[in-house]
Image 1 (cartoon, rainbow, N blue to C red):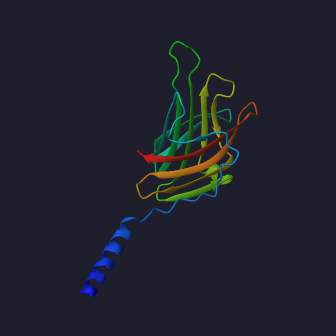
Image 2 (cartoon, rainbow, N blue to C red):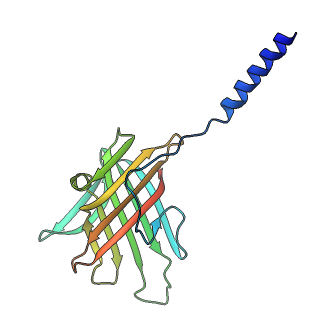
Length: 183
């Protein structure tokens, strides 16, 4: 009888401990130190934001006289990560519209990535600041790092910090730690 009770106690202990299995945290080597603001799916006040992954798409960039003029996401054969932030503007103000976009691609069969330097260009990383300003427009991202991992729930956790140099040589630093959901 004691053996049976001991056996039952062991079984319940094993069952109870297996139910409490924790998902190990994802550790990133791309650090966010020095970032004034870390962008995430928790939008800032008066902002609408989304972080999405589009399957079977690609980034299409258009140039005019050697300058990146626009970029869009079109059907293709890659995974495209899209950050989209839009200011909730006042319809009574003619020029307070503002939005930012960040696109990049990876091969569709990857479940993780880590990119810096030339790998950012290979991923066709593009940042767009769309506003009434002299620095408004589309920019290739050439400096920084970005990494991500596909989680068990089907979302991607992405972290990175990139620096964009505008036409007027202004440097814009964007840091991200966000869950990207698959469309």
